Length: 209
Image (tube, rainbow, N blue to C red; front, side, top):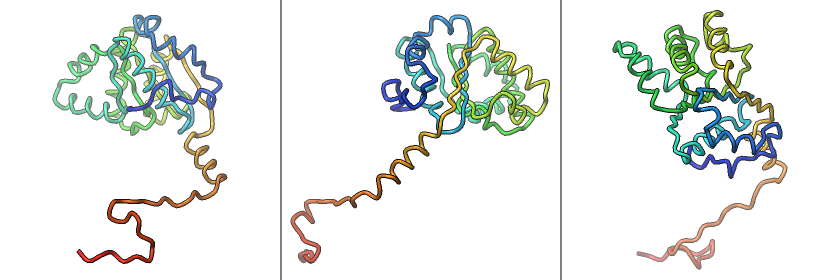
């Protein structure tokens, strides 16, 4: 996401996240070479998408290959590949990325076809290539994503086996800023000046053209 960098991420708002640890993750060597995962969990508006994008950008700048995708969008692409009998090839093409970032993981529809391709992607990258996942729900609620309990358990097991988990359990940034604006009161209405109206008062009438 454009503009989502570590420099403008508000670490003070998420004291449970260490800036030094995130900076170390942006080097990539210690985890991407081993196919480890990174999981960012917490309620909406806590900064998960911003942080995942910032980490992805930091890795790109270090020369790593990164794909950032909304989970539902990538799942739809993989479903199309399955219908065309090309799912294995589509997942294999993702191997060229050292890291695939799946944003809004738990927003995937609880549909057997969707969750099946998602599970196959997780399984294919297990211990081979890394995933970064952002999710609003804790693992205990992932049964809403995978319709089969055994599949849920297997997916979580593969994801957490070699992973770093950040829990951003903070108040929504969007809610905080909205409340701050409300406390500050209504702002002064903006005024605009253009060459056509500069110098006019509100009672002036435009000159005939």
